[in-house]
Each structure stands twice: as structure tokens, then as C-alpha cells.
Amino acid sequence: MSYLNKYQWEIVPENLPIVKRSCPKCTEKTNYISSEKFRINANKNTIDIWLIYKCEKCKSTWNMTIYERIKPCNISKDEYEKFLSNDSELAREYAFNSSIYSKNKAEVILDNINYRVVQRKLEACYIRENEQLVVEVVCKYPIELRLDKLLSDVFGISRSKTKGMLKEEVVFIKDNKNTSNIKVRDGMEIHVLTAAGKIEITENIV
Image 1 (cartoon, rainbow, N blue to C red):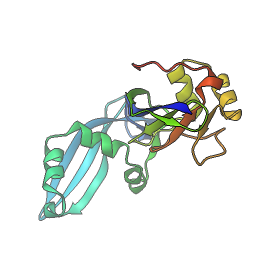
Image 2: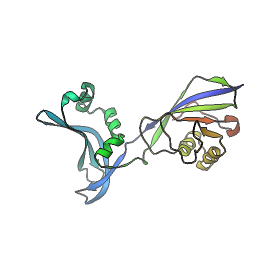
Image 3: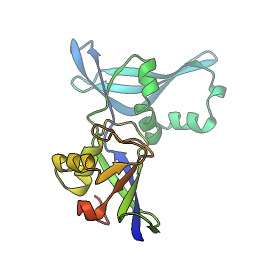
Image 4: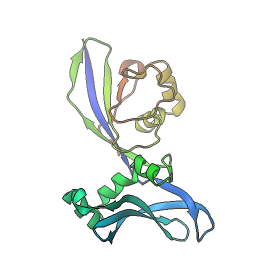
């Protein structure tokens, strides 16, 4: 009987997605960065709510529609107060909301997101299999992060080595046989055969 260590890796984005759009002042496509601030405009009995973006070059603004012609009573009191106070966590949630970008027909760039990993050790147990560790991934926001890059960053080994380990199934994903090009997703469960991989997991990840 072997020992199984369980960890949780929470993927925390350190920057927000960029919107690529034509800037009227720069007369070219530029990067628009979220200001993490909302704008609310009253129109009789309804309101419009936008998340404000700024051109990276000239700082001209573009308003991304969150709600349009909606009655305040149709928004929860808690969320409405967060809009009024420019709540940073709510701004982050909308900045990563793919349906909002679709609604605004905006070109969003998700592959430029830097991230950090918050590691938590979970309850360990004995199993009737090879000695291994299991990692439960928590990824609240959609980012374009490949599994081999995550493993390379966390374990401090090359991308080619992680790809080899995936191919040899030293590292594998539960209920997923094709891991060569897999992207990280919330709820993913990573299994690592520690004896075969000769990997040491550090207790703290910065």
C-alpha cells in the first residue's frame, strides 16, 4: 500500500486581459487596458453600466457594456453597491467574463496573463497503487495556460521534460488520455507518479 499526497493549486492571474481595438486618436489598433472602474449612466427609469478601458498609448477611453437599459431593481443590491464603489474584485470578474466580450464584439487577448500559484496541502491517505501525488487545480478565471507550462513553472524543469513526462504518463490527467496539448481548467486533477518522475514538491510556492 502506497502513500498519496494531495495538494491544491490555485491559479491567480496577476494582470487582466487586453482588448485589441481601433483607437480613433491613434488611428490604428491598440491595446486597451481595464481601468478597473465602472461608469453608471441614468436614463429615466433605467441605467447603463460600463467597465472603462483605456488605450495603452493615448489613454482615450472605451466603455465596455455590462448592463444596458436595465432597471436598478433588476440588479442585486450587493452588486449595485459594488458598481458604485468600483469594487476591484467585481471589475476583475467582468474583465475575465468571455460572454461580455462576445456581447460587445470585442477582441480579447487571454494569452498574455501572468499568474502565480497558491499551493495548499490537503489531507493525505493510503492507496493501493503506485506512490503518487494528486493536485486539484482551482482556476476561477479563463486564461490560456497549457498544462506543460504550468508543470514546468511549478516544478522548475524544462518544458521538454514535462512533455516527456506527459507522454510517458508519469504525469496524467484523470479521465483524459490525450494530455499533449491540454490547457489548464478549473477542477482538473493532475496525477504525478513521484517515484518514476523523481520530483520533489516544495511546501511553499511564491
